[in-house]
Image (cartoon, rainbow, N blue to C red; front, side, top):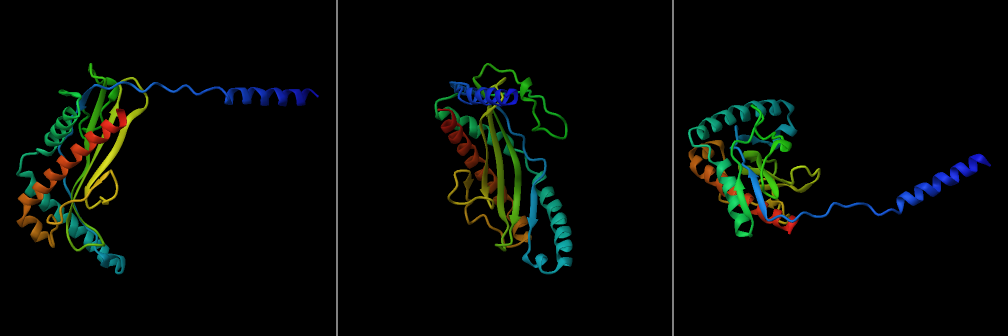
Length: 234
């Protein structure tokens, strides 16, 4: 009898707890946003995934070494140009957010650990803005997939919006431009077909155009992230 009463009491307590309404933090009103600026890519990727390597195992090793050597030459070409993608990305996000009616400031002097510049400690961010948006690249380069013989731009970037001291993110999304994009998804932006290069030699001989493709992709992603942030918090 005692065991029965104990079980019944436990069930009643559990039922009472389950019927209590969950406390949901009110959605904050966001009118001003501080941006943790993006850093320019330290390295650009270049990879050719040949279908042959899936048939001939030895070809995979050769293809890997070949891609690694070409990636080194590709980065040496781009290293001679100013690292402008980070500032351009940040400026486009800020510009687009201002057009959407937000007061925006770009944070200066953000503490960044050496070797991992985007690993920012959000708890140490000091700002009077209602929310903080961290924008960063995850990958920038060229990729030749199994489905294509061409090198196609790949610009992938991330945006995370949060309120300092609040545990959840108001927005946390990656946006893809180029080879990883699909035409139907809000998080993807297909690249212009003209930015497709049939060989590594074509890549090097059109390096200025490749850089232009990265800039166009960066601007498109910046605008898309601003639009998505607006939809998430309006």
